[in-house]
Image (cartoon, rainbow over all chains, first blue to last red; front, side):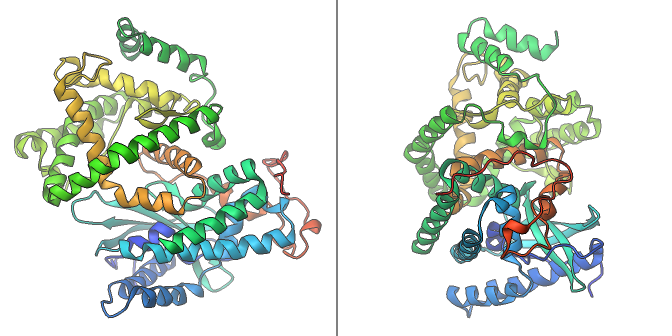
Length: 210
Length: 294
């Protein structure tokens, strides 16, 4: 296991832009250890980078490889649920199933559309610490030529005995979950829950066409 | 009366709209209660703001984005980095003033040291010498942040024509910052608020807009494409980004959003939503609005 001094450089912006990194189940107990959390981020980012920088792969193949890599540690359903926040319990079962399926498509469509954004940026983990009784935070920076470094924080939680998983991505203080929650809530307030589902459907189609 | 408030009031004399802005901000309750976590939804002017947002997007599409693309096409990266550095260096006096007003003396020292080095050794700021020498990353302060540090709430969200997202506190901050800028005060680079507009001042403002827009072409494109409510996305983006700046990058304390138990008993199965007892230990969600799902 890499120590806390081990610095893996690089990662890809595309993944960050979507925020499609391992998301997990609810906490089973204590927060993950900072070393374990850091190790996971370094390990996953290295594998993701290996895929993205592989010249032999077409975008479609990269996409498939990423989905496969991230499938196992992801619980997109929980992410989707945290994003919905208090609206979760105002929905019925049918609406939930539709929402969860659409959210997954929405996330994958976004991942696919962002693969081209990777331009050889480098990545380094700068720290890790426990931030609540359930979660640890890993801090990192993305470095690209001619631009100021981008600070990216990863929030991780312990999954029942299976090690830490990422539950949020925070870029320069902007949280993926908080942002999508605010956006989705705005649509629900204006157009109702079915309006949200319709907007997601439309977004998925548009993203695929782009 | 503090220097900053005098600057606002004094400057208002010959510029009626500034006086209006000042009055409006106070009237809108800028100096009211301290910030709450929910404040990002503080948007009583939403219909008006959405209108301005549409206007800004049209202007962006007609002018700013094309200008940014041309700028990118005709200049090499090192040139654009130089421009970015130069503009950042020019804004240093404002950062320094606000470092001091926040009592951040170590950061003020860094700001001043970097300014001297970059100006003298870095061709007037074109080269970020501080960065080459391994100084900590450049930081930004403004009067909106200074007000926040001293306990002023953000006030209502505002979408300003041409200037983009803001709020009551930050709009006042912008005006005060113009008063901290030696170039504006001396009338060298005025933009028509604190001093008369000059070509240099307008050129600088234009350069800042195009430079910033160029750096964000892809990000804006992605946001526009993936966002299901761009207005709401920009609003929360601005709120979170400013809060992060105010905390000087210290991670936010927002544990509540990661607690799914606030919304529902996790043990209750998805198949049986009606049976789920409502767990709301903190009383945060006592009065949920039922969306009109139809």
